[in-house]
Image (cartoon, rainbow, N blue to C red; front, side):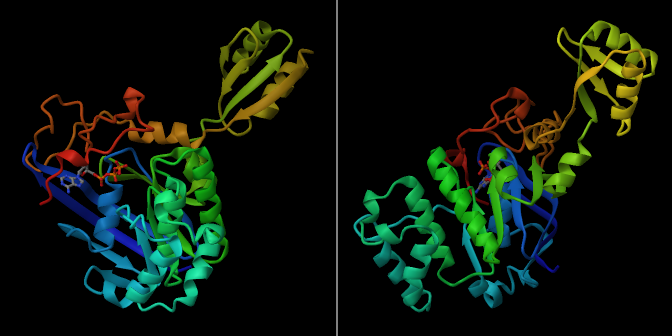
Length: 348
Ligand SMILES: Nc1ncnc2c1ncn2[C@@H]1O[C@H](COP(=O)(O)OP(=O)(O)OP(=O)(O)O)[C@@H](O)[C@H]1O
């Protein structure tokens, strides 16, 4: 497999009127291989959009090496621009135009044959609504129209920043199906999100960013396996006696009224069943407790590390913020759906 995106040592600091220098991304690495549906996961304000903007030449990095389809970015982006579709800032469409007319204009402007318009409308499931004005579209339909515009040039690589943001469950599902279909047709997809369930459902690989730094990367299954505590839920007729027997066998056991929680290594199932069965206490149920991406994500991004500032100070003087002044510390349990803090931004 070849890398379609390579980021090494990316660093970006923003200057803000209120806080001075703010490190948005720090010594960040990411590799996306061809054919992957790669999730770029992080809490609000962790640096996802900044990374994608740097990759696409929309913001200047302070340090780091970036490559898109093998070409150094932003210097040689123009060479590969025709092979990359990206939606990083929400595109605004003219409400009085139909979806079809919108795409036709974009096709002409981009030097793409207008015959692509109907194809991409079909691809994003808007074929029946192509003749309707955009102002009558739902948010989900507008998002799909945005994806359609990025697909006009038949890209090999599609970069989508928070495509499910603001969508209702039906819209999220449509977007998810669309991304799967695109991936099946051979497009490499990099999708950023702070919605964990989405990433786990759509992506095969993931890079997790927290406070501007990479905290995990790899196959979703491997990232999960790396956090597997090898916990087993055991149901037996007499949990109290079961706990005693298992502890005597050297296992770490937490007894609950209805079951036992056993923490240990990979050979525990055999040991549990033979220990209990040897004393005629029969195991009714033995279930591995697998970590999900949400628990891994919360664990990885909950570090109470002091926020990094270019001048070494905390961003808000409280010492509780992170790279995100919106206060989205997952430890506070408000991680999943918080608003952006664009209102306070002042670009460097
Ligand atoms: N133009 C800017 N000027 C000043 N600070 C900025 C600017 N853009 C981003 N930041 C700050 O950089 C940090 C990272 O922001 P970024 O938008 O990259 O995060 P994100 O992970 O994409 O968040 P979200 O999920 O909310 O989109 C935040 O603290 C943010 O406030």
